[in-house]
Length: 506
Image 1 (cartoon, rainbow, N blue to C red):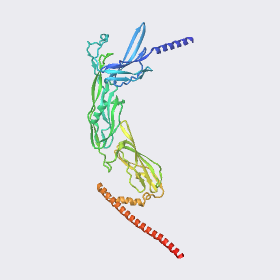
Image 2: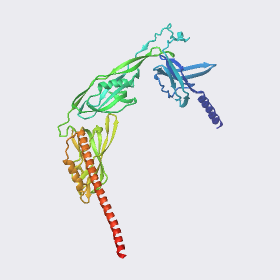
Image 3: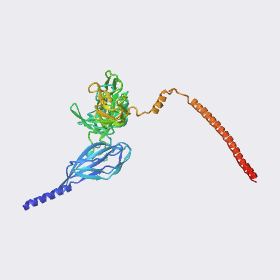
Image 4: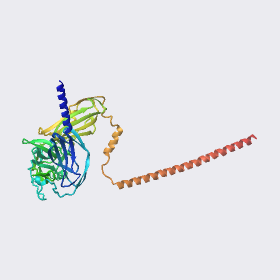
């Protein structure tokens, strides 16, 4: 038992010693390099194997070009030590001073945090090999750069792919612009100036007389696809649905997309330039799409095209005359959702329907545009009875799945109770007012002539009012004089009667 305990303790100390000895580190390259030189970040494991190494940062102004590895072994005083490294190379895109923010890497399960720093990229430098061991390794070629580069054939292609080659007028066509790089590809490829290239491509391929629903791709996200049994990474750089409004044909011409390709040195050096930058063009193939006319129909020029269904909802199926209710008519499906129009509701003596509010939702996923458009009506029933809303709400469209015209109509039924409200919404005064409107002339009149007439009428009215005021003033003045005269007569008459009475009494 004691032997087992001692063996366990011994193994424990051996494992601890091994784990302590197996250190990890990260080393940054030179802080000043030429624009033609490579910056490196090296992750190292001492006395152990490199099993995991993730978290090499993205550096603004640089692109990742190559990832290398190295193994070093040494024996000192009979003791063997070893190290394994993973080297991430970065190529500067321009001159300037760039910042590496603080970042964390995971190496063999350990998290290592590296403090940020700055890198200065200067003009192109003449690369000189001053390695004293260069002759031994065969890298010194008399001071001349005679590095031989290997041109590995790229396994990739560029394509502009419509999902259909024949559609009806108004039917959606999904067009994707993408770069396909085989998983087995060994050439080092890099995207170049995507925005400018895409702008030029769209000028050539966008079909005229079409409604566009752009998928708004903002980030290159690789997706694994299988083409003829072979796996590719698909990088979509543009995608949209187009809805043609004219019959005829759409041609997507041959277009070129350029990428950066790096050639690899045949005899790579640990220091120095091991890659050569070049541009390679990939051309898409021309595509043609036929746009067919819709079958004959009285509403051929105004119906929607796609695949839709109806969802509906009503506030209540038991209604009262004169009391409003709401009804939702929602179209759901695949097609040009933005262009959907509400059903045309005819005037009738049983309901007063008001123009609807609209609500739209559009989803763009994979190769389709789908969603919903909802029309919410407010209405007031005016007569009691049982009604089928399908008599008022019908929506006709061309069904692309069936290849025929189809009609969506309400399936709801409502019961209305109460007295008739057909004539309570407009009294006789309102009727006369609207009659005057209907009888009024619709002819245009000169604005200057109208102003002149108003000025003449206003002056005439002012003159009449002034004249009447003057007459009232005169009449008031005459009345005042008569009143004053009568007052005086009364006053002096009263005095004379008093005086006469006094003489008589005496």
